[in-house]
Image (cartoon, rainbow, N blue to C red; front, side):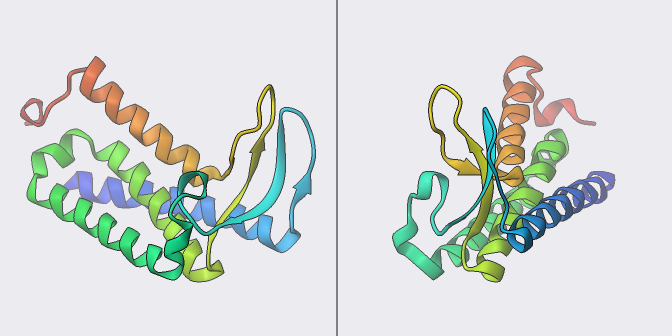
Length: 152
């Protein structure tokens, strides 16, 4: 299945890029103020907007189980996977990178701080990629009306 190899390659590239950026942010203790975006090192023990932070160390295992569950679902629904392998690849690479942070640093490394017009949560490259994956999946499903039956 060529889609599996492409998915693995894309996910690996996303994972590596994100981990390299995070390593730089951590080792330099990045703090660069500018407008509208600053680079500020932060550690997020929760998920989006620090939700579920009270789960502490067990959150990473729940997230791993969720990722394996999604992968298993896509394995059992190969046509769905083939139809949407690019957003899946982006999602898996970014999600696994954030989970890797939890094992390496005890929290997800965030560093991008949007503060133009309003202050937004601090986030990272993987978070941006996950949002892009969701947007691409919606685009493929709603606008292109791409379905598993379209794949031959």
